[in-house]
Amino acid sequence: MRVIAVDDEQIILDDFVDMLKEMDEVQEVHGFTNCNKALKFIEENTVDVAFMDINMRGMDGITLAKRAKAVKPSLNIIFLTAYPEYSLDAMKMHASGYLVKPAIEEDVRRELRDLRVPPEVDSGQRIKVRCFGNFEVYIDSCPCPFKYIKTKELFAYLIDRRGAFCSNGEILGALWEDKEITISLENYLRNLVSDLRQVLKEYKLEEVMMKKKGMIRIDPEYVDCDYYRWIHGDPLAINSFAGEYMSQYSWAEATLAGMMSKTMSE
Image (cartoon, rainbow, N blue to C red):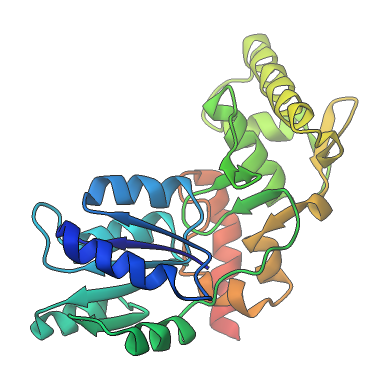
């Protein structure tokens, strides 16, 4: 599993990171004394578990955890603190674990064995898409380098449509719902489609997108997607859904409403 540790005391952090490196279940570990750098790393990389000190200068661990969960709802937070009185705040965060300093190896291993959200098993697919929370796209574990921000939204819409062919008119209506459809907007959409095709071509993933006259789709078979796994009843995906779906896109609210309805009826 991929783990980070955040503590503003460098010596304590180094000792804790060294402990984690000795554990077979931990494949990758990074330490941070700066909360903003830790948050940026969480936003841009796959992280299974984050150990966070609660009482830190500047941004405290509770605030950091809230911001981290906003972008990665499935992230397991394990709080570390020398002050047991913070346990109630940690419980309100639905943290995966809570350890009082100094943490000993046996207790750390126990928390890693009993995570709220078990680490994902690598599906082998090169494209990984996260729909829960904000929409994110990774190719070979790195953020996808779209030329236009709107290309990312186009890809999100195609993911949401789950492999169905989408007409240019449908896409224009969804992505620019409040705008009049003009030739200029149609040309912009063509640029977005070209950008998406070019990115996939650069990574030798052309088969992911299929195009015919005036219509495009993506092939779900080539994408590891938490939403798709949720649909198929995957326990990890079900546990990681916290009521947020492609939060930055208003058109995704219809899908979210359907998901919430299904969740409440089960």
